[in-house]
Image (cartoon, helix red, strand yellow):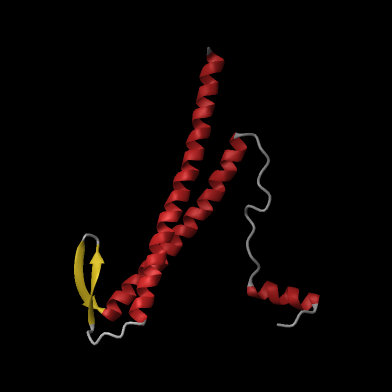
Length: 133
């Protein structure tokens, strides 16, 4: 009886950890769609050739008439916050994935925490390899 209880608790914890990963992935997808819509809106504002200096913009559930420059600034600020939130979620997924692998007694995923080379490091590698840019 005690063995069954500990097994069920263990399975519950594993499923809870896996659920965290799935929720974070779905949130990343939703934020990425929103980021893409913002990018399209910014591009439309840049290419806007209307004689008006104000446009209608959705702010929550309300429509507000704002100057084009202000709308563009607001969208760019939102892009920055969306990028930050997506990056945080991606790093959390890596940590949660590692916890899940530990809970399942599996080996860590190789290369999970790799970072790309910086420009300085890439330049040094190109010098060593004799590649011209």
